[in-house]
Image 1: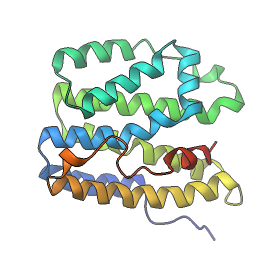
Image 2 (image 1 turned 60 degrees about the vertical axis):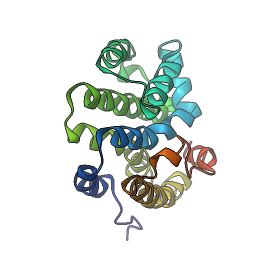
Image 3 (image 1 turned 135 degrees about the horizontal axis):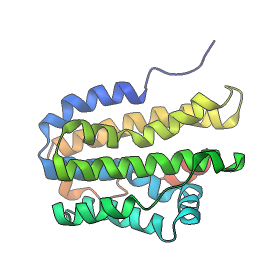
Image 4 (image 1 turned 90 degrees about the vertical axis):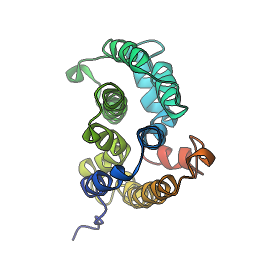
Length: 198
């Protein structure tokens, strides 16, 4: 019998779809950037991006930090979107040992593109889908590894923790505490947790 828990990216998306209505655009962008930030700390993911496009991971990190700090407008978003289009690779050419990093890199890129689209065009769905991409990355390990595999076991715990943390931090934003929130707010031991999946 599966030990998989009820917390899933899709259930979080449903929750966010309602809760995001209660945030102004500035707070919403800040929360989404906070949700994406763990990708910035994933060493294997960022190394894979660097191997495909020099300084690609730095570019992604700068975009996320700028959005979090409110340094964004349509002009900068359009430039960022254009630059992101240059970061690509053929998934069929990825070595088996790099599958996990490639999947994480795709989700990091996807999350960044969607939050940029939210800056450019609005649409709460872009914000929701961007905010759940790190959950999707954790869920990837549960979908692709056997339940006895340590990566599955670590992911099962991590998904539940991240699921609850996102809801807790979103509540802080709703209570207008965003000015007291840093990009690594309540992310103690996040690097070790990410490393446990690799």
